[in-house]
Length: 155
Image (cartoon, rainbow, N blue to C red):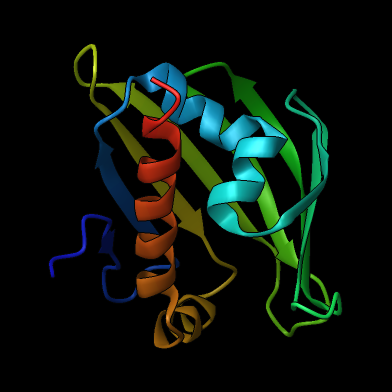
């Protein structure tokens, strides 16, 4: 089955670009990234903090079925334009990965279709390449499939 979420990682660069078109109006796609209850459903993580504003912060954690925290992550929101743009840092706690910078651009394609473009900038090309060796592409595609499924019910 073809992955709908596309990754473009050009050789020798420190970034990658992720694109996905959704069968959702841009308002609902954006809502999926800023409303804690929706984020928790499609990401399968607990939202501890989500301050959707310029210079706001965010913090998520994912636990196993027994409640043990498996991974926690946090960052700062550097820019926030409703239904258009989120610029944020992303850092995973207790891992060797340095923080990364993410530019999320939301675009209306029609009344019922929208596009998300994510540019993720890593400290080095090696850091980016290490991330790509993990099941990153599979995971983000799976998460976006779940986002589409959950948010489509809100229409």
